[in-house]
Amino acid sequence: MGPIIGMSPDKKAETPGMQEERAGLRGVCRGAGTLPEAECGAASPLATSLDRGSGGSEDEELTNLNWLHENLLQNFTLGGPGVAGGAQPSASPLFDIEGDPGAPQNPSSSSSYSSSQRDLLKSKPPFSFSLLIYMAIEQSPSKRLPVKDIYSWILQHFPYFSSAPTGWKNSVRHNLSLNKCFRKVERSLGKVNGKGSLWCVDPEYRPNLIQALKKQHFPAAHTFCTPPASPPSASSPPRHHFLQGCSLKESDIDAATAMMLLNSAPGHHHANPCEPDSPLDLSQPDLVLVSSDPKQDHNYSSMTLQRCSSRSSSSSLSSLDEGGPGHARPRPRRAGSEGFHSEEEDSDLGDRDERGGHSRPAPHRPSPSSSSVKCPAGKRARRELTAKPELDEELKEAAGSLLHLAGIRTSMELNKRSAKSKKLNRK
DNA sequence: TTCTACATAAACAGCA
DNA sequence: TTGCTGTTTATGTAGA
Image 1 (cartoon, rainbow, N blue to C red):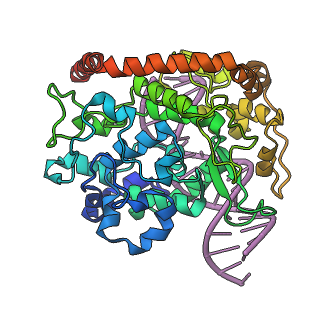
Image 2 (image 1 turned 90 degrees about the horizontal axis):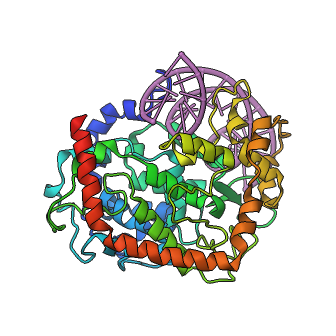
């Protein structure tokens, strides 16, 4: 996307990507639904940099997008620490919802993988860097990763980047720095700056990321997104599993997030979710705000909400990202994210300071009046809201309903999909 | 056409 | 000194 000079990796990768039977085919592997721990130890980011050395075919199998879709995102939504911490080959609710979790999903018996599917592996991931980072972090047992491991994870799961110019690393760092979804955690005390900070996902923004995932479209994957009329079979790629080629389903997300809520033990509230001693409990009800109403996006500043209401499909993530250079330039950067910025200024997240607290004096960014005006409901407000126990109950109820809905969703889903495919066909 | 999200590049600083 | 990490700014592209 960049200028010609800095040709975007996907353009560049056209060549390398094509050479990429190497990397691309790497991904075509047996990724039975959930990658067994034994087979995919490297699926754990812990293993990212550690295991890469041993590389090997095992490693290569990890790049299976199917696995990614099925396992990874399943993990995200569940958000449980068990995800990466221990093998969680068990079927998730999501897994169950659509079909047979036990069904061998073996895309890599890959003759069943179409060339288009393989191309997916070779081509640029349909995820933004933010999402990639999110995935990487979420996959880590501790929900914290150093940049290096994030690189590794991305490389591991998206071979595309192995052939991409190293600029993507810059982008990753850029995202980490800029995106409020990610928070820097010191590896050890007194090591605020310097090398090797850990990065975690700010639970406050986690739903945003989920939303972003939900809204992520996979145009290239539509080829295998066609609604199967028959139940999933071993020979056919799993039907949906979250990212399976299509945009995520609201019910998936919501139900999954609901599960997160349910999984969360009340009282596990850490001042700093990234506190090393307090494993990131992303499922904290008061941190993860979920609504059964997809329209309700608590994660956004009201500004974003407005935007979202007017722009149905704008990426949620970006709004919490840099907010877009927009046309607020010449002070582009933070302009759009001022809403969040102002939240930081709320200072309810003291550790946030570490970010701007670098050597360079934080340039005074005149917060656009719009931001301060449009964002009355900041994190604090949300917390106040969500801290209510009754809300917790409501959430649980909602979770139950959502799960129920998710369970019976399939038929509706089919309808939806057929409608969608019709729509696509029309195009 | 406008606006937003995102990607990319690059400069710069701090640290090991 | 070098390389990595982190921050920030600038700019371009794509999509809605």
